[in-house]
Image 1: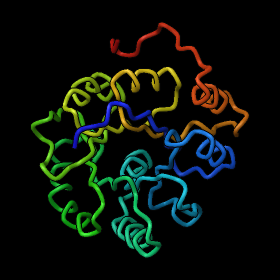
Image 2 (image 1 turned 180 degrees about the horizontal axis):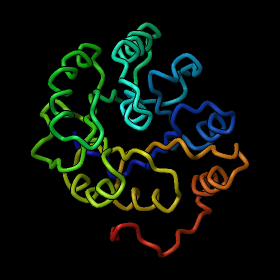
Image 3 (image 1 turned 45 degrees about the vertical axis):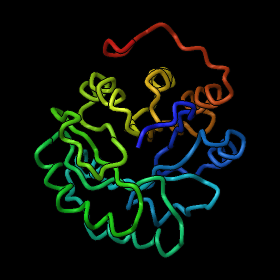
Length: 222
């Protein structure tokens, strides 16, 4: 599915239900949503007015060394369906920075996720190319290691697919994603230091159109 180039970039603070996030969602329609994973479902109540997408917690498993929890992921899918809510997409389980293992996970779990009728997202990893994208993947979620993610962004953007970029926590990088007409991004760092912290204030300014990007470029993307 091709992107609507008029669409504004949506920022999805990960697993965060702060009051300021709700305020922004109401004031800036279509610019704020949630990325919610299995570990957050017990403490995050989904709301019909808040756009959201479903994570799989593979990155959290990779960073902590804990085994990935298949049962928790399946329970999340069932919970959302029981509430009658429709996510923007669901991220099929992946393995961070591992192309072959991620494609194997897709073969295993994409048929399961497809039963719910929601758009499927594939988390692309280091070394993957557009030729690796399955025909039934509607969203490209750019994961992988940090440097590879930013270097490969133009390649994925040029596919014309819906693109989401993971782990984006700085306003300067929002401008990069806007430049490449990315559909959405997520990040856990926006509320660090509470809603009065540096990153939250910068995000609020960006949403209001008051943040001026610097001329610094990341990883040669311009």
